[in-house]
Image (tube, rainbow, N blue to C red):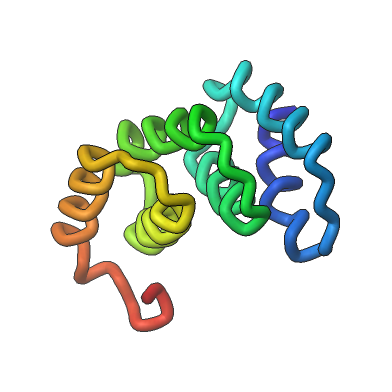
Length: 116
């Protein structure tokens, strides 16, 4: 399922199992069924892509749009994690970064030192 693939992508770097073919196929399945993903799955897929250094701009923009539209369902810590990982991928997306930074500014009291 797309949810399982998101978890797989997030766990691949930790397991030191990196297969570009598996990543490409997982992204194809997740892209087609992105509505089946919850916000944590979206975050896991985004973090997984970053940690795997897999820069599929179309897929990452799709995930970013879901994060932006559903950020009220996410903790400030998850938003900060996604922001940090998306920025590492160096994708030009000023409106997204402005929206997420503004949201984090509004919710900064929720962040703790370990979230930095």
